[in-house]
Length: 276
Image (cartoon, rainbow, N blue to C red):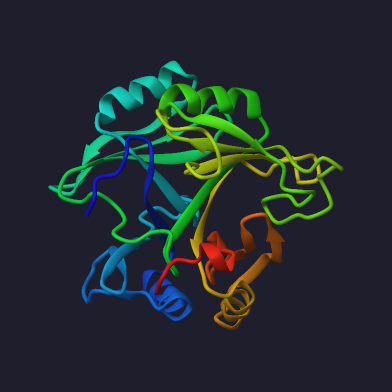
């Protein structure tokens, strides 16, 4: 596996009440495979390459949700920057055996994310290809504080993006105006900011959504046919949170699995599709 650049998204996992049901759902939806006898944490593979993991919730109070991890080469220094920038460290750095070290934190708006300092495991072995991770973005009501936070903690450089009147969370129409929603793309430090270098983004939760909706990260998986994937998810017991619609970078939908975990799927334009 190639090492990940500092602050790049490097891993996703989902916390589920029923791990075996999760394996069936994602195995059918994405064709992922899992090793027998994985225990409470099951690695997911596509074509023999690591793409994600499914975990059995150890505490019923934990959310049923997908989590995103950002790469760091010094997890202790990263958690210190999180505190200095106004964030909260939820789980102090802890070793995950020889695989690496992890921590969990929340930005000033309350969105939770993870840090990963690689040991034997770098992260994804496959991304930006069909049925693998391709994008993540945070949804917040405190865009100014959150923008400054990620710029300080991760060194991200922002590029404002007009997505032409369709809210990136899938709510086209309500909560948008003629100029489109407020969306910012993140590029790593040392790169030329823009869509070509972006590794994630920030959107705004508007007043069109319930006040109790918390800030959160939404992660996306690349698919070859967005409409077909959405329909298949429903047949497997999942739900469609935002029906398929077109954006400048392809066609997307927001889905829920059969246990309520939310994720996005993105069908890139033909010229941007990864090879199988």
